[in-house]
Image 1 (cartoon, rainbow, N blue to C red):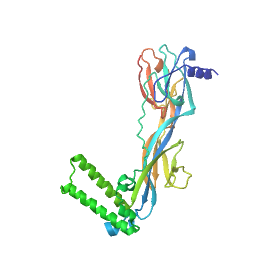
Image 2: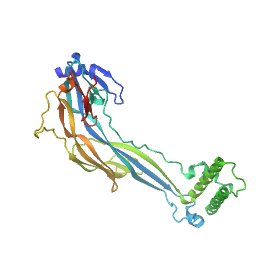
Image 3: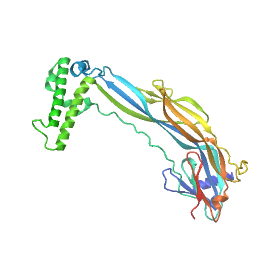
Image 4: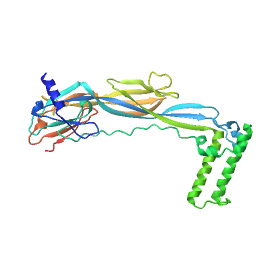
Length: 361
């Protein structure tokens, strides 16, 4: 009951400080019996998958690509394909309800603790917090317009092409326009055009328009390809080794889906323990005991995380995991010393002691 009272009083006696993690400062005072409460984290692994989806469609005149343009491999049917483009592995901490601690820091210098979300400790005796560097995550992109979806595609359709009911005749007219555009480009480059552009900007504008019209006409023969990407993050909270567990599937129809959706091919995750955190030892090799009333922190272990799909490995990271570690502690006297108190920065991902130094007075 006394510990519960201390916890409740400490929560009420908070002062919010500016932080992206909604951090709060809790001060050890007589009002809360100099008690401060916090919860060490477990480490979860976020797997961010970027998948690319491609649609290929034949052009109206694909049957005539070889005859008029000497193109032997036009797209002849509509196809959909999907692939994994990238995988990013990141970690973050979530509160472990089995690792709740109340510490007593009695001192005239009013020791304090900075807590982040879910009561996870960030720092003691310092408003500076440990910055966890995270990689930049991919962003989903829509498909760009194909050459047949541009204004240039509307410009190249002549009245004669619109009036013709023969696909062969329309293909012949389209091919003629391609060769005319190429001749116009050559004339402009060599300076033999009847009307040359007045300046470089005008020249670029005309050349870009010719290129766009040619691409639109060529697409009528060779077909179009358009791609877009999707991004989705999946989270695991590992407590043991994992061998090729399906974490997601990639479907050409439904995108990035859950593992139980059999419409796509699987993305696998494997996790292998590398080492476990161990209690520190003294110079004689004797295991040190947890100090009385100690400030608890985690000595994490490490694991290797691999993500693969379609026989290819896309990510392979070594990560620190609180679950593979042990909890040790620093003596409270380090933080209440009148002459040389120290500060402690926690790693919010694992609860590890990331930095220790003399506290500012």
